Length: 412
Ligand SMILES: Cc1ncc(COP(=O)(O)O)c(C=O)c1O
Image (cartoon, rainbow, N blue to C red; front, side, top):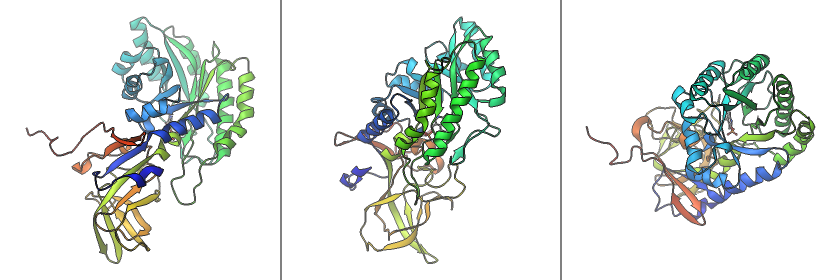
């Protein structure tokens, strides 16, 4: 997010999220180019579902992962063809499956109940629906920040049960098993565990394909690509990931049973995270028992992850950039509090920055993924941040909600 310094912060109300359209497209192109011939990226909408963000990313990509019915709607709303969309997620509703079955998208089934429900809907409609089976692998390499496999999980079918579930799907006339999906973990910054995971998934998909009556047409590899958020973390070397996975994917491509399948790399934050920031202003500053505290106009209501509440055991500081500052530039240890009436509302418990004063403005960087839509914006009814896109040198309001803004509360 190199364009923050060009903003006229006196004219823009805070807090706001800002995304860089060029950077979104460039990162999408980069991942597509690096894995060319091996895997095609599929953008996980959940990492940032704003329609303009989707447009910037999908100007470069051919595949998208929706994790809810409304994410399917978002993908359709930007003009994607249903064939570009896979719909995953453990909690699909009957009425949602009814609405999208037969439309041409691929549905990733995650449980036997879901298989029963979708089969019944398709039989009733007299259609056949393409499904991928999500597999929950037994083993996840060490190195993923959040692991979803190798333990009891709501995601997918446990690996030992896969042969029986494949036989079950194959026996249903209304469902057509077209391949397999696995997403084992996220936030990995080291190429080796990612490569080990992909090698493991190649073996799992190969064994699963042997149980199926027809060769798979689509295989989805959950990437788990991380982005550096905290001190000491370095960006993932995706070129090195390519080098390490190439022999395994090439072997898979030669396998007569699996070779014809489209291979997707499902990822979100690696594309959207670095391309966005949350900008917040200091509402008041004080010293409490010796510790300087800056009370900012954004807290965990606007950025749950930066406040350490999205899966982290301990809060670690996100990267901050001071954009507007009036006082002494000497760095001082201080707390960055949010505006909420709870002591856990801290963008940073302790951080060393120039001493902040009322009116100063700072940005939480690397916040284009799991920012606004992953935060409880309605808690305590502070204004919801505006979302802006920088595009061709201009700043465009791309907000999708004006929750809690003055004038939006109806009197009853
Ligand atoms: C099934 C699935 N696909 C894709 C993603 C995107 O992950 P990330 O944004 O870390 O790349 C997730 C994240 O939890 C997921 O659960």
